[in-house]
Image 1 (cartoon, rainbow, N blue to C red):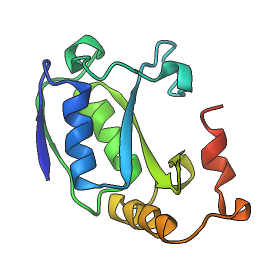
Image 2 (cartoon, rainbow, N blue to C red; image 1 turned 120 degrees about the vertical axis):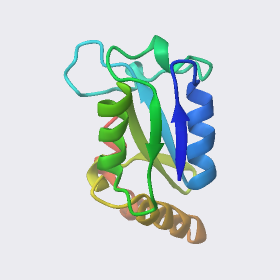
Image 3 (spheres, rainbow, N blue to C red; image 1 turned 120 degrees about the horizontal axis):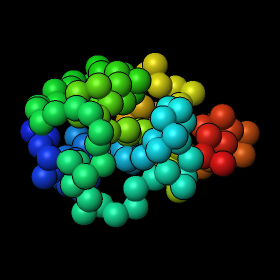
Image 4 (cartoon, rainbow, N blue to C red; image 1 turned 180 degrees about the horizontal axis):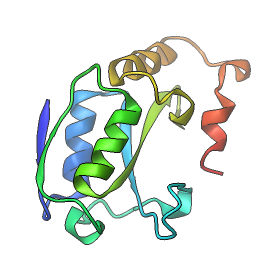
Length: 137
């Protein structure tokens, strides 16, 4: 799977492409103005019409190539190192979107399967991954 990313590519174009590949996952883009590598909900870019060229300080145009075996951490690193943008992957869990930071070692396919399984059964409070939920607070 691949997508060409250029200065004029919008966040929406990348999000749509990613969601078409992994229906139960989504990516969000973040600014890291204090350059500490940590993000909060206040750092999330809400305008999906923003072009990549306007939010990156480093990186260049290119093609992002991933597979179903690509881990979440590898994907996030690729975006940062290749294109100079910060992304975080979220996984659907029932009606919630969980930040996958506690499970970044899993592949995109594994994350997608976890999310799909969560939609097949009711979620009980004891099943919620509190580490993932608390990351954006």
